[in-house]
View (tube, rainbow, N blue to C red):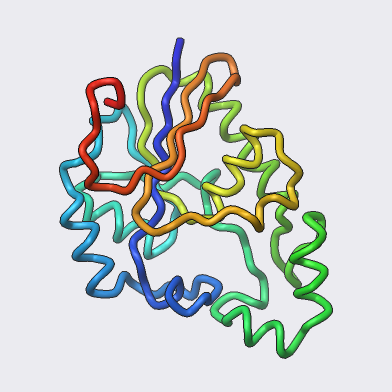
Length: 196
């Protein structure tokens, strides 16, 4: 049995543009327009999931996807840093930010560490290996990073070296938990027959 999961990063919003930890902002006009223009370009799926955030739900809707919330793919909890920019937090708590950016076991105050996020996503991937067919999942960029780190068995510190542009697809396919990876296909790009 082969499982395929296509992870789609959300369209642009104010939080992404400002490097702000998610604050529940909706998509901006250009982000919504880009997502709408990519509607109909995705392969059909047996199930469609979404990170339960405003920007992911709105991206799924703009893409014409009827998605259901998937708690296992939720955005990382940023604790008291939620809604603040990285510069704001770095100015107020430079030591805490430095520890968080260098040690995957360190969490934002009241939040979730990169290690815990990667372990959560690894558990979700293990369970999804038992689901035949294709899954589409509109997820936060941090989820895509955790997927890549997990599949490549990379050090969790590599999480910070991965860039996930808006409205790109990262696909994993495999059986029995042995995953293959296809990175960063821009949405709206024609797909060949082998890609469908």
